[in-house]
Image (tube, rainbow, N blue to C red):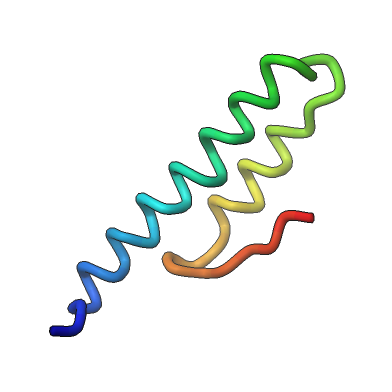
Length: 56
């Protein structure tokens, strides 16, 4: 059984929240003075839903 487009988009959003936003928030607590979160947030907000990003 394959996922519908809506299910796949919802899964992508959930994965992004868990593995991008939450990780950055955890890191931000330790590096608040050098954090670039506003620029990263703006960049991520401008992406199409389901877009892939590689964080190195």
